[in-house]
Length: 422
Ligand code: SF4
Image (cartoon, rainbow, N blue to C red; front, side):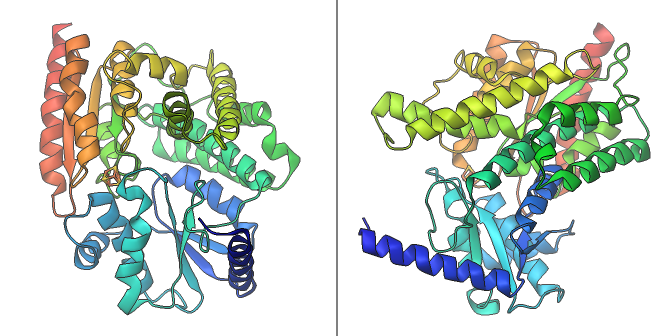
């Protein structure tokens, strides 16, 4: 463990490093994942004086660059996020002496804590001047971890909540309405929220939820002719990133389904819950458990305020987190936390016990933890709810979209047959 003097020195060097990159107006490249959430988070971070750019949609080049620069037994998300950075830096759009990339680190036991080393290795020869920054809340990568103050963290919680609500409204509107109208409502909300960042009104959640519900009030789903709802669960990056999952949500909507995603807040609560659970079960993390308990209360309350706002609006809110935990306990112990751990089976049970009987479980290549808690848990979930229609879907950097669509068509055929029988 570093001495007090060493820690002070580290903090000083880190401040000097971030001061330098802010002063020189570096551009920071952010990987794609959740376009709505990341755009809001990007706008919050931009107030620190850096220009953040989310990787734009790409063709095969990111997958090819990933396969070239990362050893091929790494998991699929590690390969394509690294490949996206390499392809973007090669595009010629950036001054390589004033560009950095940023990657999140979970701090868990899985590779998600180590993508940064893979990215640095990939940059070693081609982009030695490009620093790899870290966004984490676990005290990792001290020198390169983005310093965030309490106000910025609080703003990020709001960005997560607003992003979740907009994603939910969008997913429930798009199967029933004109794409242009849905996008116009979404863009209006994003513009309003971005204008508010840095002002007190950004924190007025109820008023902002109302603004969003008003924008979508003419874009409600058709409750009498509701399309079959298909839940998407699995590894977080492949689940949300349209690039990583070959536009899975668009494909399902075009096939006449309504896509249902779990919220990002649910994943944040899962991470916080695990830290509290570690303390309760093993006495681990005594110094930080108090902060995690406070964060848990803030997040949970925020999700419940949002659900209340959505009730009676014609749109369905996300499942309550504590309900998801209880549903999960029917099939798995909440001590299982490698990768997405108990959360994947818990989300599956919450979906099939509710009104989302069809589920796609996305499985990235090279991801052992999520094969166990994803594909491996389908049988116990189906034993609990036999009418559940669940398929695992594998993704890797060399698989084709056609293969995946053929697998999905099998699930859709089951779904249509059941609807006809009803
Ligand atoms: S959970 Fe799977 S996909 Fe995510 S970092 Fe770990 S091995 Fe990779």
